[in-house]
Amino acid sequence: MSAEPHAQRPGGRHPHVRRTFLALSASLSLLVVVVSGVAMGTYYWTQGKIRVIQDRPPASGHGSPAPPVYTGKCARTSCNYLLLGSDSRAGLSKEQQVQFGTNQDIGGSNRSDTIILVHTQPDRKRATFVSFPRDLWVNIPGVGFDKINAAFAGGINHYGAQKVAETVHALTGIRIDHILYVDLAGFEGLVNALGGVDMCVPYPMQDPLTGLDIKAGCQHFDGATALAYVRTRHQPCDRIPDFARIARQQQFLRAILAKMLRPGELLHLPSLIPSLLRNVVVDRGLNPAELDYLAGQLAGVSSGNADFRVVPTVPAWEGSLSVVKLVEPEASELFARLRRNRPLGDLGIASELTPPSPAVIAVGVFDRRSGGVAQTVLDTLTKGGFDTSTGLAPASSLGSLPRGGSAIYYDAGASDGKAMADVVFGYLSNLQERPAPTGLLPPGMDVAVVIGATYQLPPPNTTGPTNCATA
Image 1 (spheres, rainbow, N blue to C red):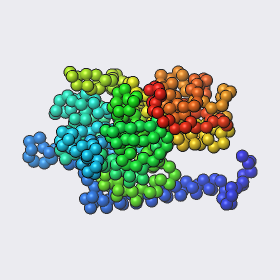
Image 2: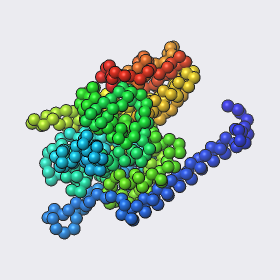
Image 3: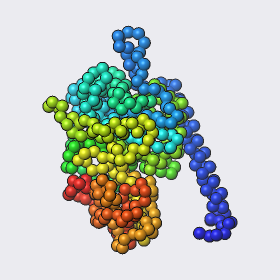
Image 4: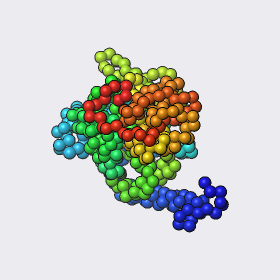
């Protein structure tokens, strides 16, 4: 770098002034986004165009509705959003209802097959996504023991969302501030409203039950494809199907976050709000003021500050019923740390007999004079749902790198270090996996991918996974 204090970049703007100008422009752009978004949200709220979750009826069936189980307002240091996805077929096209069945075909009642608690910490600009397996055996307040997804039985118009919130609160001790619900058609609509998302998958996947039929490699997911992908649980290596599905849902959410946090992407938010709001149902407390607060929280969150966990559980039997049950004391410790805004360590990183989701794997890509191939590798892993927030760096920044060209390095001392490298290997199957020399991996990085001058990406897999450990 030049030592001259007045060195200028092309265009005549001093580097410091240029950075200040860019920061100011970004802040003003964000302000416009927030103000426009909240203004649009206010209009839709006052016009009754936002669908809201119904209040619970009183226990006696008479009088005023019972108090809601959610607070309706975020706290200063944290906010907890309960995201629910149901298996309701309402709103699907006739062709989709022929393929997936109608609500009557699945028994007439709906269940919340996706339950995610989003715990945000505004002061630290962090968001933690905690997935609850749908077969988790719990005590549903006022009902008794059953699978947690049964708490939603009856659907959104029968107060099921609040019953799920009540169940999650009773199980975890974590207050629920807001609830957001989406059915199958709503999820498809949300993805389409966002313009779809580019995803990379390591092998071809088919599932006639969800309509999934995709090739290996990078491709664009529209709403229908995304819906099929996050619902599938019948892939060759899905030893515990629901655990594998959670891993893919986390992967998809990470890819969506990476898309939304790209430079300039937030500028499109105001125009998307009407389409987004048409596809979700929210609690009555999620009004424009809270939308404003939510927008402020999202403003500083980066992809690297989004953490994905799953409630620690193991397969079990309850009589003749296949369920999953909490692993203790790990589950209680996870809930306690969330309540106290404490670091989670390795709690809930992966599920039993299931490879870690790409969403929980922090990967650094290091360029060893690759001539641009390293950037392609980084883009592939980002679209594969990995945490690539550290970006691209020269291989020399790793320090004492062993001789050789390209390789995948992992922490051999970490309990899941090799398993994480195996998942990366699924995308870069012509690289060797090597234990990292002591001190090679920077703090917080699970896997380092070094790309040398002669490396070329492998051709797309056409046959499926050859080793379920790398699926």
